[in-house]
Length: 384
Figure 1 (tube, rainbow, N blue to C red):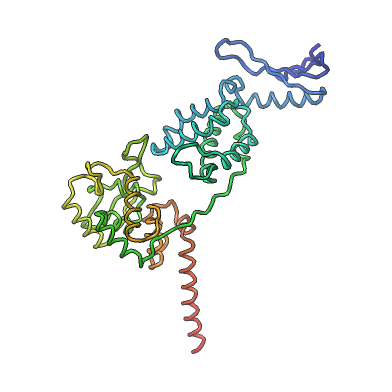
Figure 2: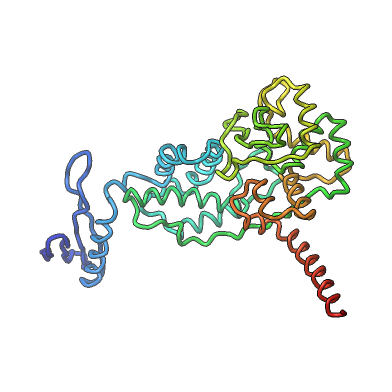
């Protein structure tokens, strides 16, 4: 016979198979209105008593009935449609959808949401690192595993979805909190040395793309920001450029999109040479965009990268990413005495500290030079 417990504590009984069972009320079914009961099992009465106490406590914090309606895959879809689509930049929608459809759902999508643990996630991340790449023709020559950065991005997506599940009382804790994530690989920064710029500009001019790459190296704009510039953003008299939008490829279409962060919305100064180049370009242009496609609309970010690689190859220079032109701007500015806070503001970074960390190799060299200079000054004073 079941041993009665105090109100709200459930009941405990010994079963015919010798085990002890604790039973408690978990809630009511939203559709039928019927009471939903849950149970815990153990070898001893004391063990079940502790399990029952824990289950009842957690049941007060989690809507068990509602939680059972979702698998991990189903909840990821709910989170994406009702949360990510609103909060995340449109340019990131396709990336998030790819993480969910290509990696999360095929591997852990059928797992009940309440049973997702940090151990399950740890196994999932390990698999992604060794064999997570989706089979595509263009990826045949690439490593089979995903990069640590991509795995960390996937964890961030899952973490955000689990935080929402926690807020909705579907789970008690966020399983991503206990995960050990792979260390980021340091991606070597490449820049165009000052002595290579003449060759680069010469070939860019012959290829008809000189203005675009000159302005990039004069401002350090992100690729999408450069392509999103319109003539209305430029004040040639004041020598300023207002960065207000970017161009991105979203769902296969080249469109305008909001900028990366609030710090990305900024005004960047340009010198007389850059202003003169833009003035001449404006006189020849017919589009509202400073660097338009042949049809007059926004130009594809991919085509700009291919164009860069062609120019570099013809100039006999090593291949670099478009983002490395931004690094070149920052490196040359710092090497020539521009202070870190000014460079950070021009780049649109969220803090000068981030800029300092990114370009530590440049500032370290500058500090050594400064230390040498101060040493000479002080040595001179000692000799007098």
